[in-house]
Image 1 (cartoon, rainbow, N blue to C red):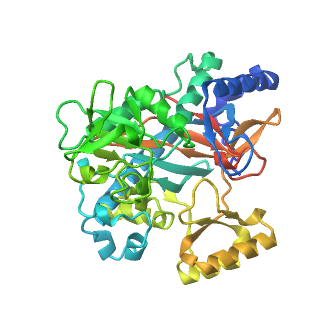
Image 2: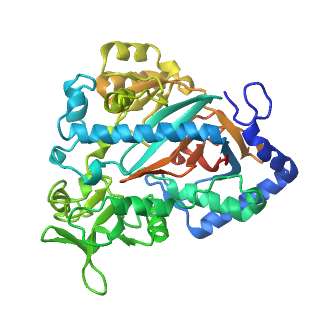
Image 3: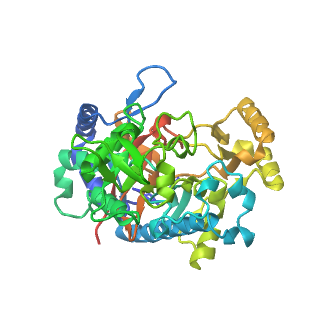
Length: 468
């Protein structure tokens, strides 16, 4: 395990010099008191997420750890270039598969992985979104296994969540420990809402005349990420709408207001593809706006991200992203993938079944840490049961080695100890590409755990990128 603060040799690493001094001067008692204060603030503000079907109170706080995770400026430069490169390749892939399919005809990506993918929408064939951008907010999940070893764990091209925690974590830290920021050595992240609004405005549809009207469309207060929807709408200064607030007339989208109907040009939608329009997709959907998809295809409105973008973040497609970078950009990948076995391939499936106790196995369409098998921590009975699932449908699973994720100092059980972390930056893609210096660090609060997802007991940290 690589400890990001002390390094492989046990010596304090330069990026954490200020943190080490702060920890020593503060003491654990003060940090524990401030942790309780932070929890009270989060609860008062209402920063919760919902978990249904597990009993108890579904509205939960994501635990916030006060000790920041730190990247040196040089580390961030590499990450920045790699994230932007990956976002460009993923959007190029989406345009290609919905048009000429050159990467499929070249035999680089198997066609059946695209055309039989549940996230692929035949209705999007030939549709050209403004600027050829399909995924406007790309969340890249990155893990670290050594001083210079960063790897991409998965891509999120639809509606990656968690950016509200990135912003609120920083706000809490600046409120509680303003002295840590006095020297100006930490890059700011608070311009993300402005950058997101600029990105939305840049992809306004051909029918837009004048300044674009943008909205955030939410399924409603019962959605697990509703706080984030309302939070981002408020910070961008745009309306938060539910589907019943919108209607389509003459190929354009309108918003019901107290002053009468108002044109809507760009919709940052936080609703899954299947539910956006009951006339085009699920007729039983009560969330959709009738006629919305036809208005989108005709250029009357822009949907961010585009319907069908999910075919690019499928865990089986993920294995081909380095090939996409070479094919579309003619570049060497800056960030490597984690080695991955696709169980759809006979030899790979055989290897996975023979080494289940060593691997992490995931459902191709899974998310949130559910449906995984962490072999080294599973019982013999659990491995045997999972093997039966794989044999029943091998194409539904991938496997990866059990990585020694890096760890950072974390307050746990009243003491400071290392806990495993991952990292999700948010790359905005419009006419320009924007990436704030930071992102969401998720931390596995249980000792030895590799699962950082909030739904599985993980927490979050502020992420610092040091200035040059």
